[in-house]
Amino acid sequence: MDKRVLIVSDSTSDLNGELIERYGIKILPLGVNLGENLYSDGIDITPDDIYKHYEETGELPKTSAVNMADFGDFFEKATADGYSVVCFTISSDMSSTFNNARMAAEDYEDVYVIDSRNLSTGSGLLVVSACEMAKAGKTAGEIAEAVNGMRDRVSASFVVDDLEFLHKGGRCSALAAFGANLLRLKPCITVKGGKMGVAKKYRGSFSQVLKSYVADQIGDGSDIELDRVFVTHAGCDPEIVSACTEQVKSLAPFGEVHITRAGCTVSSHCGRNTLGVLFIKKTPVE
Image (cartoon, rainbow, N blue to C red):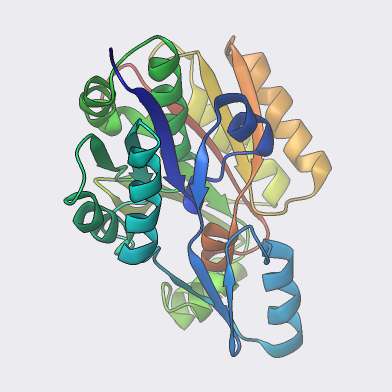
């Protein structure tokens, strides 16, 4: 008899509570260092806490990986309870979380660690797909093989309204930030090959730019797996989120459209007004 499969993710997958509860997903939080205090992402700190601290002090947080000991403790209990485990992490190019999980898993059978090569709901798309496979009776090994084959088809991108957080975090020069803000440029950040890069720079107001961005991402929908799509944001105006969501629905007949709030990791890098549309394509992302 096959073991029960437990799907696990670090907190950077940014899944909402409804999906976590629906599939029984276990979430392991990254650490968030804010001032002299250490918090657990999504447990005792939220992105709004980060924004408030930044407004008061000008200080951005530093995030820290889930450590090997925490992974080991989790894998020990899960396997002792009779589960096989499929564990997802943020891209190994962005954090040591994957390597910590991989090393911890070496001590256990039937624990499969997946480097999502992504972040936020780009990883979340793989997590939910794994949950659907487990529900259909696939083994942990079969799920791991399948999701590893899906990674290059995940389309993950975000538009950033203001480059302040990227500049303060050392990911954008002062000159580039000044020029972009002066010209009202809004960069579209994409994830490819496990790394972030700028794909396109839009110009105009945030709300107008997002209309163009959503249209560019969805296109005619013919190369998109229409099971689900995520509209993920880092604290945008609800009217903007609603407008983008309705536009997504109007452009393609997705089975499920999920609105999620980015957690502390994405929020601390990109800032409040960041929004992305994320889905799985039928062909590899170019």
